[in-house]
Amino acid sequence: QTLRRPPPLGCQHSSALACALRSNMKRLCVFASHLLPQGSKASSCQSSSSSDSSSGSAPRHGSARLWSALRATSVAAEGIERFGEAEWAMRCKLAVAYRISAHYGWDQLVFNHITVKVPGSGGAPNGHYFLINPFGLRFDEVTASSLLKVDMEGNIIDHGSAKGPLFKQGFVVHSAVHAARKDLICVWHSHHADTTAVSMTKVGLLPLSQEAISFQGCISYHPFEGSAVELAERERMASSLGPINKVMLLENHGPLTAGGSIEEAFVYMYLLTLSCTWQIKAMSAVGGDLSKMHVPTGEALERLYQRAREGRDKNRDHVGQKNEKYNDGLEMWKAVVRMMEDKHGAANIYV
Image 1 (cartoon, helix red, strand yellow):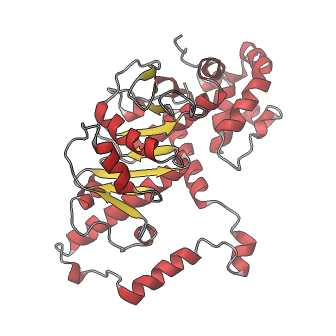
Image 2 (spheres, rainbow, N blue to C red):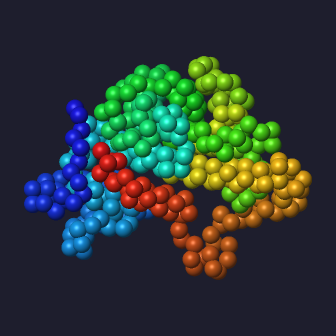
Image 3 (cartoon, rainbow, N blue to C red):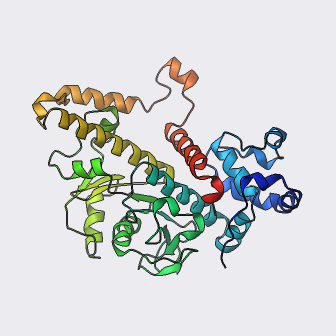
């Protein structure tokens, strides 16, 4: 079955579409509850917004606009019919992740990958299935239905709408982590220029910024073995990552982040690439002479680590108790999703 391209968002108030919406509203509400980030509420499930209808524009909140775009098309229903509610929700979230990666330069034309385990596939014969981009599409061309579904042996379970091939190197890197770490749902790998440059240095990531300090003691390194074409490297790569860490620099290759959700892997990639960009700029400014840089060491560095650890406690003082009820990473994710929907149009991503 080929998924049809959705109508423009401006068509959402036509009488024919309104009729279709009413008939599918209950089903799509269930879908939206899976798709929205944890802690978000799809208020549109209760009733259509009169203010939105009068203005003719999508609401500003990213999750609400996402809901509006999905309920306004038949594509969501078709996606649910083909892939199931949970998988379609994950496909939509992964599709926007690819647009995010393209926006920040975490891609290399048609190379690099973001993958996520398919919900409920743990009992499959060859272990969890995971979703991956078909080789040949740019990251800003990836859509929810175009993603490949593969198993841990490299078999394509569903070719998606793009019907592109599976890129072996991407499979090797991502299956290594997915197979070894049951706690990780998403794996995000890129060849971001500054971060790859840092991976080529013997000093690695230095504690030069708040963001970089947050990774100290919990970042892994994997020795360079050339192009990832050997299946045997998967075991060594998993060993390098270890049983706890979620961030790894593949030496002379690039960054890899992972998480129990797509949002978590995104936050790590965002902070890691930002840290490396600042490090490259700082080292360039002093000609690579570390003696001319403010690199915390000894007791000073330990105090910075301690403050970073204490900073995670949002109840440490009365100001935090009254105000810090937010989830930093979730707010970062929601902000960048809104950015991608504004840039590309939700109807061009979740299709």
